[in-house]
Image (tube, rainbow, N blue to C red; front, side, top):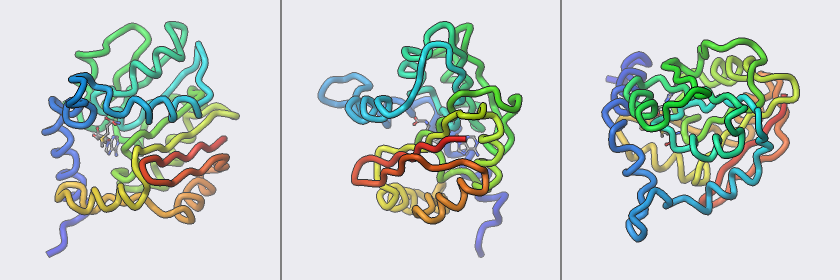
Length: 212
Ligand SMILES: C[S@@+](CC[C@H](N)C(=O)[O-])C[C@H]1O[C@@H](n2cnc3c(N)ncnc32)[C@H](O)[C@@H]1O
C-alpha cells in the first residue's frame, strides 16, 4: 500500500530529527583534514554568486544544524539579521547550541508557513532542502512573500538535479522527495512572481538565483 502524504511527511521529519546530532559531521567532515571543510570550494563558489552585504536580512530555509551560519554571518556582519528556519526541532536545537547570538533568530516552522512579516528579507536561501518541501508551490509562494521587492531567492545543492534525485531515491525516508526539472522549476518560480536570473545544473553544483 502507498503511504499517505501525512505518513511521508512524518517519516521525513522523523528522519531529520533523528540525524540532527551528527548531521554536520556526516555531511561536511573532511577525513583528510578532520575539519568541516569537505565542501569548502563549493561554498566559495556559491557565496561568490550571492549579493550579500553588511546589514542584510537573510532567511536560511531548511537550515538544519546551521552549516551556512558562519558564511552568512561573515557577510551580513553584526548589523544584519539571520533567520534560521527548519521544521525539525532537533536540528534547530543543535543549531542554536552551536550558533546562538543576538542577531540570529531560530524558528521551528514549515517552509510553507514561515512566521515572518511580508517583505522583511533581502535574501531567502534554500540550501540542500528544496526537494523535501511537500507542497512546492505553497512553499515558494510563502517564502517569496517574505522577500523585499528586489530581493533574491536562491535554491542550491552541491550536486546536479539528477544526482540529487538519485541520492534521494536510495534513502527510504526521503525517496519521494524530488527536485523538479528546469521547466518545472521555472513554472514554480513564475507562479510566485520570481524571475530566474541564473540557472546552473551541472555535475557537483546546482544553483538557481531569482529576483522578486
Ligand atoms: C538535507 S538537510 C540540509 C540541512 C542544511 N541546509 C545543510 O545543508 O546542512 C534538509 C533540511 O531541510 C529541513 N526541512 C525539510 N523539509 C522542510 C520543510 N518543509 N520546512 C522546513 N524545513 C524542512 C530538514 O529538517 C533538514 O534540516
